[in-house]
Length: 335
Ligand SMILES: NC(=O)c1ccc[n+]([C@@H]2O[C@H](COP(=O)([O-])OP(=O)(O)OC[C@H]3O[C@@H](n4cnc5c(N)ncnc54)[C@H](O)[C@@H]3O)[C@@H](O)[C@H]2O)c1
Image (cartoon, rainbow, N blue to C red; front, side, top):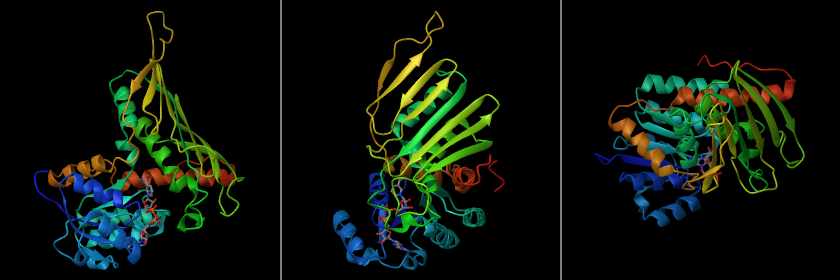
């Protein structure tokens, strides 16, 4: 980094990855915050952050004029309130995914970001996952040809997580976790124009929402996609993704050190599969913070800004709606 950004991080569970990401970019950690004093103490000790820089009330960060950048990793239901308060106080904000859980909150964050003139980023971490960065590069350089089908899944057993804020029906698994797969497909293939979904509910009786959902989507007349979300699955965490193009097919994952590429030989048939090695890093917080810091310091646009985060949630909300009504839903991107 050209200059030391002065950063505060809120939410000391997953948010500790933001502390590490900012530290790895040479930022100054001016404050950490968690409303739970025990989580705050543990994070402070872990990163050597002295007591005078530890806060239980995020308003202490809102009010500190020295702090330029704030990362937010609190329960999804609070993303809107904290992000808006911070933006209105003139901070640049990196907020965890999903941007928010309701269309009303999505709009409020967009408004606050627009009015503040500050940089806002939603942490759609898959865009910094090495296997998915490679997939994007193979699409952009033409290796896979024109896409006609893309699929991704978010399979992650939440058995031990759902007695928390994650069991709120507003935080449907398609929005909370499935937003990763939806955002990935939007990044690789564009905005789906129609979605249709079925929901299943067999594994997590303690939550009021479906624990598995399968959604198909139409991007355009000649490009379709599929997202599968399971938050009760009995398997290891995966985001297996397959990208089918006219010149090749790519099979990749965020938890595998290899990806498989098929291209087309002279006879028009697929070649033998090529194994590409790739670093496994499904929470690349260092790259995420580096990209955000670069946008702040060089006044560049943020790729996953508030509108982009809102479009991803809009697709997730449309999937949930379709699974409940049995009807095709057209996402409304007019944010
Ligand atoms: N990118 C990813 O893959 C990924 C992975 C896990 C979580 N997340 C996201 O990160 C966020 C946090 O998730 P988590 O797993 O750390 O949740 P968690 O419940 O384990 O931890 C949240 C922390 O925030 C603190 N907190 C709650 N409200 C607060 C407030 N108003 N002010 C200060 N601290 C507050 C809690 O005390 C707790 O320590 C969520 O938005 C979640 O969706 C993203």
